[in-house]
Length: 575
Ligand code: FAD
Image (tube, rainbow, N blue to C red; front, side):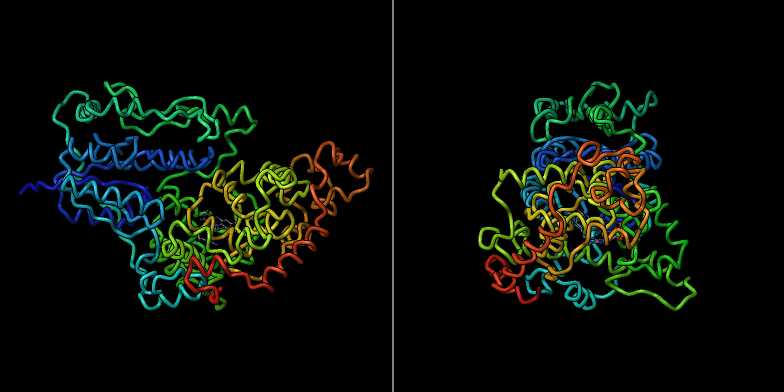
C-alpha cells in the first residue's frame, strides 16, 4: 500500500548516508517520497569568513553525497537550494506536498535558534518535524540535563555523565535504497526531473534570484568576484539544484593570484574519503591501541599526519562519530601488545573532548564565549583595545605567518594553505597569541581559525581557544610552549619549517627555529638575510613571556571569576 508520507530530508551536519540515525528515522516513516535537500544558508556564509579550503571541502562533500544519491536512484541527486531556510523551506513544503521534515539535530546555539523558527513554521504548515541526534557520541541536551543545566567544564565530568548514560550507540549501515522522487518520462530523465522540480519552484525563482548573494560584499571579506545562484539555468540547462563548483563562486582564481597552487589543497572532502581513511587507520591496531595525543608529533605535514586527520570529516558529518568510536574499539581488539592507552589521551578520549565542548556550549548557548574566568574588561588579560597599533601589527603578522618565529610562521602558513594544523601546533600558536607572548584576546585568534580551518566548529574552536589562553577549562598558565625548545623535541631538523617557510630551507638545523640568532655569515650562506628576506622577530620572546606571566599570576591571585559566576551560576570551582 502506498503511503502518503512525503519527507523532506534536510542535510546539514551530516553529509553521509552511513551511520545516520536521522536518515534511518526518515525511512522508518515508510515515506512514498524522500526529497534530499541541502539548503545553502546565507547565515552561515555571512556570519563567517569561510576560506577556500573549507568551501572546497564542503562542496566536494556535497558532490560526493549527491553522487551517492544518484547511484541509488540514477535520476535523482542532492537538491541544492539557496536561501534563508526559515523562508525557503516552507515554500518547498507546500510545492512538494511535504508531510514530514527530518534532520540530524544541531545543538549549536545558532542551529537551535534556526530550528526553533523552522519548528514554528512547520507547525503552521502542519508539517511534522523529526530531529534525531547523531552528530555526537552523546546528546548534548541529555548530558546537560543530567548535569543539572551546567556546562561540562572538565573531561572527567563528561565521562561521569557518559558512564551514567551507557554505551555509545552502535553505528547504523547506509540504506541500500531510498524512495527518491520518481520520473515519468522516458526522454532525458535527469532533465525531466530537474524541470519538474524547477516547475514546482517557479513561484519562488524570483525570490532566489533577487536574493543573490553578492560575493564581493565585505561579509565575504570582499574575496570573491562572482555571484552565486543555485537557481541559475532553471529552465533546464546545467546546474539546477546542483552543487556549485568552486570556480563558479570565483574563489580558485583569487587563490591562484595569491600564489597558492591547487595541489596544496590536499584534504579531499566526502564520505568515501572519510571511510577509506578510517579503514586504513583501523588496519593498524598498534597505532589505534597505543595512540597517545601528547606523543603525536605536530611537526609532520598533512601527508604523514601523526593524528587521524579525521576532524574535517567529523565536522561536516562525512563520517559518523559513532562509526569512528566503534571501529576504533574493534581495531583495538586486534592489538597483540599490552600497553594500551586510555582516555583522555587515547583516541576515544579525543572524541570525548569533542563532546565536552559541544555539551558545554549547549548549556551556555550564545554566552559560550563568555564562560571565561577573567572578565576582559576587569583584569587586563584580554583584549587590548581594538585598533591598538601594537596588537594589530602583531595580529596581522601572526595571521600571515610573518612573526619572525619560524615555528609559529610555518604552522600559520600550513593552516592558511591547507586548512588544518596538528593539535599541538594549535596549542603553540594559540598560547603564543594570547598569554604566551602577544597578549591578544583569544577571540581574535579564534576568528582567524574560523576563516582558515576546514574543521572549524562553533564549540570546539572557541572552547579550545579558551583552554589554551587559560580563560576557561584549563588554568595551568605557567605551562608554556617554547618557540625553539618545544618543536625541537619533536623535530630537531625543522621539516615543517623548511616546507612552509622555504626562504629558511637552507639554514642549518641549529638555527632553524631561531634564524635571527644565526651569525650574518650563516644567514648569507643560507641565502636569507633576517629582516630582509624573512622578518626579524616581532617581539622579544623571553621578555614578553616574563611580563605576561606576572599578569597571569595577578589574574589568578585575584581569583577574578566575575563573568564566569554570573554566566554559569557558580561553577567556577569546577575549573
Ligand atoms: P585526532 O587527534 O585524530 O582526534 C580525533 C578526533 O577527536 C578529531 O578529529 C576531533 O574531532 C576530536 N578532537 C581531538 N581533540 C579535540 C579537542 N581538543 N577538542 C575537540 N575535539 C577534539 N577541533 C575541531 O574539530 N574544530 C575546531 O574548530 C578546533 N579548533 C581548535 C582550536 C584550538 C586553539 C585548539 C588548540 C584545538 C582545536 N581543535 C578543533 C581540536 C583539535 O586540535 C582538532 O580536533 C584536531 O587537531 C584534529 O585533528 P585530528 O582529526 O587528526 O585529531
